[in-house]
Amino acid sequence: MDAITYKNKINSQESKKTITCDNNIISYSISGNDYASSAIVFLNGFYNSKASWVKQQRNPYLKKNYKLLFFDYRGFGDSFFIKPHTYDIYDLVNDVLIILDTENISDVTLCGYSAGGIISLVFAHYNSEMCRNLILLNTSTELSLIMQHLLKNTVNLLDKQVAFEDIYSFLYPWFYSEHYYEKIIRNQKFFQKGNLVSYSNQAIKLFIDAVFNNDLKIEILTSDIKIPLLLIGSMKDKIFPISGMKKLAKKAKNAELHILSNSGHASYIEKYKEINQIIQNFLE
Image (cartoon, rainbow, N blue to C red):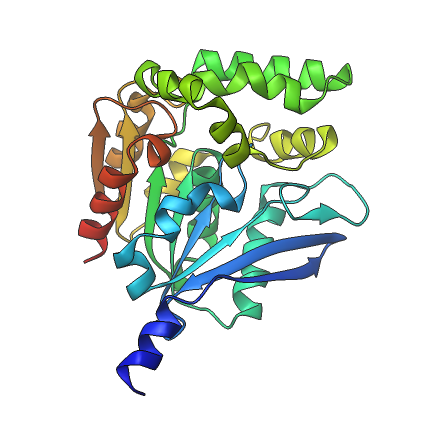
C-alpha cells in the first residue's frame, strides 16, 4: 500500500453506523486508523453524546495509532428506542459488546468519562480478556453530595414533565470550573450548539436508574482489574471528588493517577490538551 493511500485511510471521515439490539437502535461511529489492530472505545457522561469527544477524535496521535469508536447510549443523541423499557448497567455493557462483535474488534482500550467510567469498570471486570487498558476520567466510587442532590432533583423535575433541556440549563454550570464557565458565558451560542443532544425525559430517567441507582460494588470490581489503569481527576470537580479516585487507585493492581489543579468535572473538554497528552504518554 502506498503512503498516500495509507494517509487517506487514517484521515478519512468517521463512518457512522447503527445496530439493533434489545428493542433499541444504537448509533455509533468509527474513525482513526482503519488498519490499527487495537481500538479505543469512548464512553460518554450521562447527558453527553458521542459528539462530545471531538477533541479526542481529532487528536493526531490517537487517530494515527488506533481505531476510535464512539457511540450514543439508548435514547441519547442519534440512538433511539424502538420500544422503551427498563434496563440495567449490564445491558449497556452488552451494547458495547455487540458493537465490538459487529466490527470484529477484540483488542480494546476503554476510555470512560463520569458515568461512562462506571460502565467501563463493569465492562473491564467481566471482559478483561479483551481489554488492553482502562482509562477513567473524572470517575470514582463516590458521588458528591452535590451530584446526589442534582440527580434526585433532576428525577423529580422529570416526573413533573419539565423538559430536560430546561433542567440542563441549571445542571451544566456545576460541571465546569468558574474560569471555564466564564468562557461558556461569552460563547453561549457556540456552547449550546456543540452540546445540543437529542434525548427524552424517559431516556434520562432510565439511564439514571441503570447507572446510578444500583448496588454495584465498584471497589470490588476495581480490585480485580489487573490491566493498566489510568485515572485522571480534577481538584475542582464538584461531581466526583478526588478522594474517590484515590481510593480507586489504591484498590487497583496497576494504576496511574493524575490530578489536574485547575479544571472542573468536564476535564476532557476544559483541559483537552493536557488530557490527550497524559493519555498518549500512558499508551506509548
